[in-house]
Image 1 (spheres, rainbow, N blue to C red):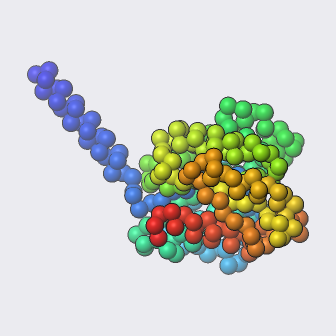
Image 2: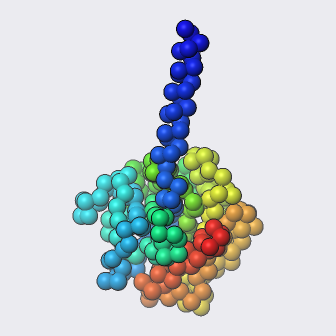
Image 3: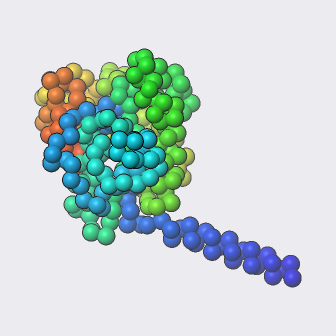
Length: 278
């Protein structure tokens, strides 16, 4: 009788595990997006940006009463994809360009956590508290919107999303604040490795795509950072750098304008599709 009970428990366990596995939709590709202001979105959301294919989804990472969005729920990926009053993000046109090329049965979802002006170490869970009060109240309010810990908000929602689909990549756009810091690639490596560990992912399955900041050909004020960003694949073999050459900016020469954002998003998608063999 005891042996029978053990066998029943064993098969019940297998059934539960199998159900959990098949609950994931392999045709729902999920991408984690993080960084600072250009990832959050500063560019103006124009009329052409307001219509989006239903195959492109976003998970809300903050409460957004204006749009009726709740943390942890999937919605049509109408911008803004990040915080409540942000603008157009590269994540927008990454997703739009992905679904143009992927088979019709495939959906794409993004989870975007970004804080304007942040140091990359804000996403290092061991030391993030040293970087939560950099610019005063407006900055700390951004942190509070993510429950006081942007990295943990991204990870907790990523775990939730893994019940629905498969995480296929990580997109990073950050570097202006760390411009000139030669340790930046190592800082990024720490964050990336933590993400892989916390989400039980493998680097060979989940590449990291990092975008350059506003380029020297646009008189980018932080363009020197690109010399360091370009070295990221030397430190992370599964990393790819997305060129910002020719991507137009706002008058501040730090933030991309709407056309520049669209082009950056397209380039992120082109590289991800290339990595996937399309």
